[in-house]
Image (cartoon, rainbow, N blue to C red; front, side):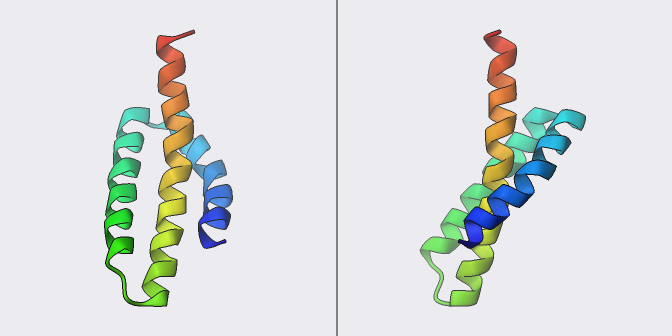
Length: 77
């Protein structure tokens, strides 16, 4: 539920940021954060840390989808 809420709320702001700033940089940063949170989730031993990592994962995933769709639509109109 933490990831779903953060994904849906941050998706609005991520979409606006992707329209204004460099999409490739935002996508690469979001992928790095997503990978880092996945790594930490695999070795977590605290419920609080797990919740925070799921929150960050939702935020990073919300930036990945609109950025990647926008980049692909540039190549395939």
